[in-house]
Figure 1 (cartoon, rainbow, N blue to C red):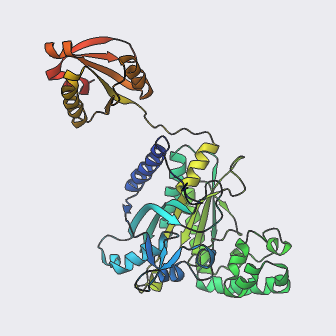
Figure 2 (figure 1 turned 180 degrees about the horizontal axis):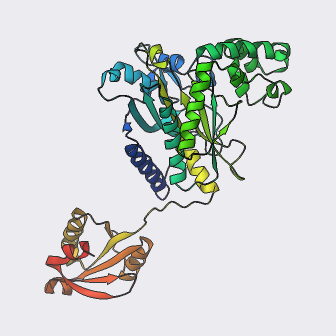
Figure 3 (figure 1 turned 180 degrees about the vertical axis):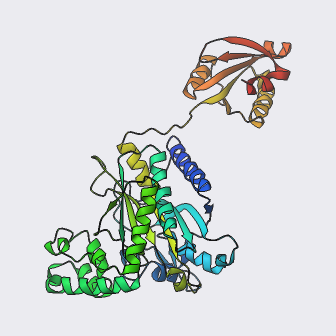
Length: 421
C-alpha cells in the first residue's frame, strides 16, 4: 500500500531546509536587535481561544479550523494563527505585571488552516510573527511596521511596498459600520452568501470579499477615513509621521481591511510588486488590536503585531531570483585506507568534530577515487588521507581542494593545525 503525504502539507528536505534555517536565524537576530523575546505556545488550544480571539464571523473560525474533540469531551483546535494564543498566554501568565513594559514577543511555528492549497499556501504552514503588548504609543505601530519591512529588505527583496490604513477606535468603527450597512443593503441580494451573512454581523468583512471585489458597490463604499473621529485621525497621522521620520515609504489605502475581528486603528500589509507572484501579492499583514486582552479576562491592554508565512516569503525570494548566502562547504573529508586504520580514523574524525569542524568520511568501503568524488560533492575544503603507512609514521596527508597543494601533517597536531586554517 502506498501512503502519501496529506494534501496541503510538504516535506522540507535537505538542500531546502537550509533556506528555512537561514530565514529563521535572520528573523531571530532581527528580533533581538528590536528587543523582542521568543515565546512558544502549544500547537493546539481550547477552541474558545480562537472563536473568541479571532472572531466568530471570520473565515478562519467558520471554515478553516482543524477542530476535534478529545477523550475528555473537550473541543480543541490546531492553532490557525498566533496572536490569540499569545494573548491567552500573556493573560494566563500575568505578563502584564512584568516590570519591563511593553511586553515584546515573537514566535515561529506551524499553523493549520483547512483551505485550498496553492503556490506558497499550505494547510500546514510556518508563521513568524511579533506582538507588542502594553503600549498605546503610535511609535510602537511604526516600530512593528519597520521591523516587518526590515525583514524583507534584509533578505534581499526590493520590489515591496508598505500599505497602511486606519480602522479607527470603537466610536469611529461604529459610525463606519452603520454607513456600510446602509450602503450595501440595497444591493445585498447581488452579493455572495458570505457577504449577505456578514452585512449585519461584520460589514467591514464585506470589503475584504474575494468573490465580490469587482462589484460596483465596492468601489463606491464609504471609506473608514471619512468616519475617523479627531482622536483616531491624530493617531493615524502620528503613525505616518514616525514612518516618515525613519524614511520608510508607505501608501495609504482606505480600502485596506484585515480579515480578523480584533483589529482597530492601524492596519497594514506588505505587498510584493512585479510579475510572477500570482494574483495574491500580500506577503504579510497585521495591525493594532486594543481590546483583545480584555476578551481573555486580562486588564485593559493595547496590542500591536504582524505575521508572515515563511512559505510565501520563500516564494517571493524565488520570484525575484534571490539566492540566500547559505554556505555549503565542508571542512574536512577524511579517507581511511585499509582496515587497520579505521578505528584511528574514526577517533580522529570525532576529535575534528569536537573542535567545531564540519567533517565526513566514507561508510560504504568505496575506492579512493570514488571517495575523492564524494569530497567534491560535499564541497570539502580539505581531504585528509590516512593509510597504514602514514599511521606507522604518525602523519596524515592533507590536500587543499582549491589549490591542489598537498602536505604531510603530524597526527598529534593535526586537529589544531586544521582548526587554525
